[in-house]
Length: 209
Length: 209
DNA sequence: GTCTATATCCAGATAGAC
DNA sequence: GTCTATCTGGATATAGAC
Image 1 (cartoon, chains in turn brown, blue, red, cyan):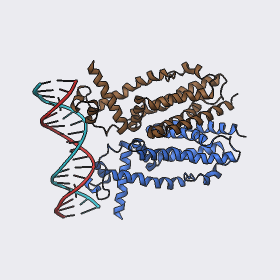
Image 2 (cartoon, each protein chain N blue to C red; image 1 turned 180 degrees about the horizontal axis):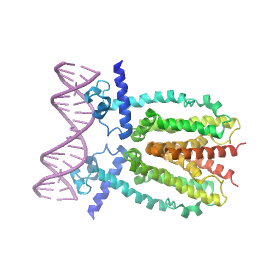
Image 3 (cartoon, protein in one colour; image 1 turned 90 degrees about the vertical axis):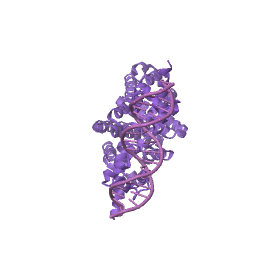
Image 4 (tube, helix red, strand yellow; image 1 turned 60 degrees about the vertical axis):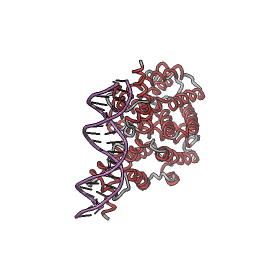
């Protein structure tokens, strides 16, 4: 199906452009040129510019779930990952964060989509909610589930799982934001990620019952 | 000077519009209408649209420093604030974060400028660096200075000040981001801020020498 | 499905009268 | 400093031939 192929190519190029310049700054002509066709031909695949944007939002959700599966991080149900974190060492914990960190930065679709969302997060209440849900709540809820299990197992200090998750996750999100803006600082941020994990690991184990 | 008055009104209205819709989505006509003049008259005060944006970036830096002074938070040199944090209670610490949190959200200029920066952070390397410097590095460095002093005084655990600062500050930044996108969740975020401060305070004191 | 040609609109910016 | 009138360019989108 060359038809569906073109549709996908439009989505890919549109995401590339939107993530770099923002929705408003990108013209239909630019998208068409990137795909290798003329602007009016885009309307054979999408009814308009907004429809391309909407299709992007819808389609990336699926890919995210599919791809994170490969990293043994199942954001939709933390229960499956609890064995991975049980009696985990500090080095192994860092290795785990490092993987998701680098994946988040280097997977083209994921990182482009996140940058696009950063630019467009105030465009509508729906996008605002989607941003918060995807990049804050989901990550916090996932880790809260992990920490709840580790507390039950007596491995870490008995603190509120939600607060622990926020403490652990927010610095990671902040560092991802820095690298999104300034990719040349990735090495430095990786260092900070390392010291963050070390500190968190130590603090959370020192107070254990 | 009614002249300078108009110039300031242009900046105010432009910031209001840019923060809500982004630079590209706002037209000179919209800005002019908000000020109460016609579009060509804007060119008597600024050479073009970009110049209005640039003036905004330059002028808000000054106001930020001036306003935070009133809250006894001197981001430029933490040394002055160390006495405030020495032997601080958990409640007093929360009250301090709560103040800066609410100020950041409710001061019109500050919150609008931050939203505008969120939208435009990828527009140029300079803006990217400015965003990181203002909303990450500066805050982290400030708190690292405070924590370094508290460690020297034997008040808190002897961990790396930078990592401690990241741990403390990143959740606050994340919660401000949530409220920027979804102001209706401010109450909920204030609750999370409370539990964050409580957890951090306890952890950092439990490991003290 | 792709194209050319075109319609319609609105943007940023300038000229010049008052 | 403000205005009206205008220039010029580029945007989204449609019509209709191939």
